[in-house]
Amino acid sequence: MHKVVASAGIVICLLAVAMGAYVSHGAAVSAAQQQSLEVAVRYQMWHGLALILISLMPLTQRWAGNIAISLVIAISLFSGSIYGLILAEWNAIWWMTPLGGSLLILTWAAVLIGCWKGQRT
Image 1 (tube, rainbow, N blue to C red):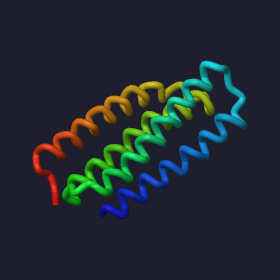
Image 2 (tube, rainbow, N blue to C red):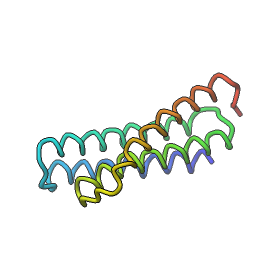
Image 3 (cartoon, rainbow, N blue to C red):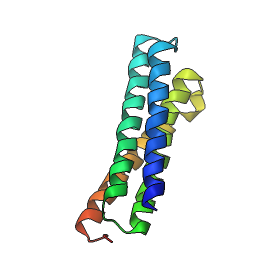
Image 4 (cartoon, rainbow, N blue to C red):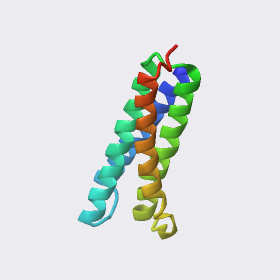
């Protein structure tokens, strides 16, 4: 399970680098949109790195797996919706950004609980 979690983090980081390059060099967007896209890329990169670190923590496979799934869904909703809103003008998905952000917060709370409640291998 820990290899799967690490691999998910690596793929998320890889995609963040690719999106960051596109945002910096290819996207024709306003300055405000550029800032929003940079936030999405930054959150995606940090949470990809977080998945890699979580894969190294002595958590049970179930706990690490649940955290990983939650982080992947959360970052997909948060960053993905910002990309979709700005680059594809999919205005109907606006609600995914705060949902993804809220799920990120809840997932970090779960990581904290897992560290303190003994969800270790």
